[in-house]
Each structure stands twice: as structure tokens, then as C-alpha cells.
Picture 1 (tube, rainbow, N blue to C red):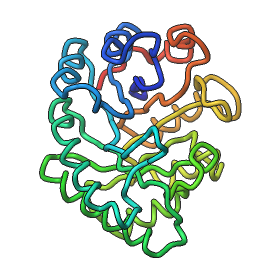
Picture 2: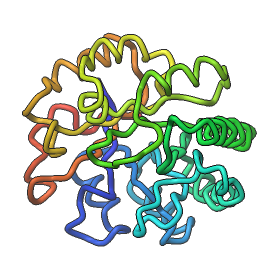
Picture 3: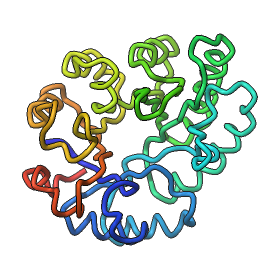
Picture 4: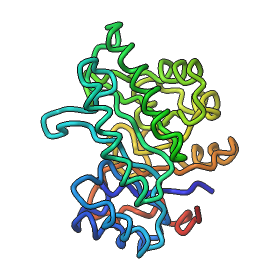
Length: 260
């Protein structure tokens, strides 16, 4: 049975961020993820996790000025120092939350630019090596160009090939089913191919990015497929609720309370 992690940046936003941990636990989630924790002290985030018996599944490394449109530094040749600083910023949060995987964002850059490709490769290697002694995996995620135009990492095959080429033990793929369906389609076959390198899975309905209970994909089939493939990681619920979060959790009730 898949282990679902509520994304607290998108779900339960009827209450302030630090109150969402309790809301997720009361709804039956045993794990959470979020985009960024950096507006709050690491100890405060860790305490909310412990108070509510939750496991931290994932969060993103600092992306730069998110409100100005920045989506990370990894593929930006002139921002390597910022990338290095972002790792030092994230580490106390990883330690406070006990998270086991962090998402490295590529940034807005042209994948046809050899300098951007070289910068991304350098950043991926550096980040994975930085976090390896701390027992942390680094995941990279292809993101579709509809939601984030110009995002460097917008192709699952490119991410797969880089991971397979580098052969770094703690470098994995973040397989967001929503992004995969928009970019490529053929989700099930790609899951079967890329499961050996997958470190985290995320879900949302397509095309609306709402609850995974309809539209293009048969999610009950895909959840069963994850079991058939032996996936033991978390499934992050990175979707925008149509209304109040708890009113849209009928899809989740059969899985509520699944233990890490």
C-alpha cells in the first residue's frame, strides 16, 4: 500500500503553515512534505513533526528569490556560490526534521546551452557529495513547461541518462506523475523503466492539478502499479485542493494511516 505524504505548501492551507502538521495527522497522514521550510526555525518544524508523529518525506533546497521567479541555481553557471550556500542553509533543516531526501531545483536555463548543462552536472555532483556523509539522498525532478516555462530540467530521459551516467549512489529521480503525463504521457511504462532510479513519487490530477480522483489518469491502477513494482518510498500529494482540503480526501480514505 502506498505511503502518502501530504504536501503542506499546497494542502491544509486553511490554517497557518505550522498548524498544518496537526491537520495532516488528524486527516490520517503519517508523512508530510512541503516546498520550503525556511521561513521558520528548524527546531520549530522538527517539533511539529514529533508532536504529531509525522515523518518528513521531502523538501526542496532553497530556490533563490521564488517570488521573483527563480526556481533554483543548479543550471546557472554564475550562481554556483549561491548553490553552495543553499546547501549549508538546508542542512540544519534536514537534521531537525530527519528527512532522508532533498530536491535540487535546476533553475530557468536553456538545456541547449552547453554551459548550462555543464553547470547542472557540476551542481548535481557537488550537492550529492555534500549530503552523502549525512545519509541524505538528492533527487532531481523534471518539471513540465506549461507550469514552469523555461525550466532547465524538462525531460525525464535527460534526468534518467544523467543519473545512470553519474552512478552516484545517493542521486535519484523525483518522478512526479503529473509532470510526466504532461511532458511525455505513457506514465506506466516510464514508471516501470525508471523505478530502479526513483527516490520519490508525486501525484496530482491532470490537467487541473487537483485531487487524484479523476480526469486523465486512473490513479487506483497507478497506486497498485507502484506496489507491483515494489516501490517503498513516499508518494507526495502535490496538488491544489478544489476546496477545503478535508472535503477532497475521499480518494485517500482507503490508505489513511499507512505507516512509514
